[in-house]
Image 1 (cartoon, protein in one colour):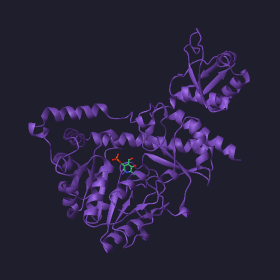
Image 2 (image 1 turned 120 degrees about the vertical axis):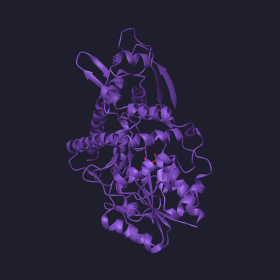
Image 3 (image 1 turned 90 degrees about the vertical axis):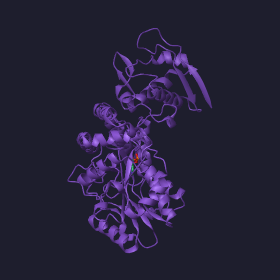
Image 4 (image 1 turned 90 degrees about the horizontal axis):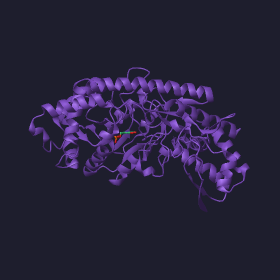
Length: 477
Ligand SMILES: Cc1ncc(COP(=O)(O)O)c(C=O)c1O
């Protein structure tokens, strides 16, 4: 059942001066009104600071009992959406409004709140000035020949800049001719999957926690994707055997659990590849972001013949660039180039700008700044957690753009719901579980994406998160 009612409005400034369309869904009137007001705040139709109508007036407007309105206001005050002060009435709270990042994903039509879920991005720290300066230098100085279709494998300036950068920062060992530019990791993985299929590969082991999107890329080419268990020391590479042709791993910072692949498991992975002729697909999506100690080098540098390395500009510059790179063992270069096709699909002008951005040192400076910011956010998250629930902890190491709050078994969905009712959209670890993974290895946890929220909204987001965790703890006692 759904019925739409309109408040009659008020002439007093800051009160609900305009008519507000309230859609009451379902048969439970109070719950329907509470959700309708949450939605109005969430979508910005009721901006922060707006004075809510007196309960008597709203009751008359909506044809409801006054007690229904006061209970509804009480609930929204308890959840942090409204504030009430003696003598000055009920207002839309700032805290709820601040936590709302602009809905940027058109698939979230209807004004759903963006939140801390992986994939959400704010990137308020996008280096606009430095990027513009690099683009200006490129456009001013590039020869006319640079504005043609370009080399299908990627622009040579960018490949050369990346060869130097990756050797310096990640210990990658490759000449520019082994680097192939692609439109994001998703694209690169698809190219590699097709190249492997063309060479007769049938299966790629995939970590028991990871993005389903990437598992789909592999299965769409006809590959099987047997799961490889993940624990606090990363993927169980000691379980790799001759039945798989390749293994997709996130050694530097397991996604999403945050574990680093332990030294013995790094060695197991390399020995497996050498013994069986298998290929390690090393997804180094956030290798630049390590806070506790010097980053461990990429596996690729140890055995360039058995590792295909994947990096991306999504974390270090912005996902909107859609530029990533793959470093491919020499024998596989022709097959991957064949999969990519005869015409370059990644903007050559953006590639040249990124090459200039790297060569000028702006890339390193930007990563350093972000690293400081994300390290600080991680520390603040740890502090929030120890205030709201000392028994909970962050798992995974100090790295990356996401952290995982481990929860007692069975609490994941209740905590996600408590967060959602406060307007905070997050993901639980279960969202990333491989469908065929052994249930015995399940972990309950919340995935917190640091980069989804702007600096200004971060403190209020943390307090909403703390409140969701506390509320859930109380509710489950
Ligand atoms: C596990 C993992 N790999 C790779 C990437 C990079 O993907 P892309 O380059 O398509 O943005 C991401 C981005 O979030 C990721 O989470």
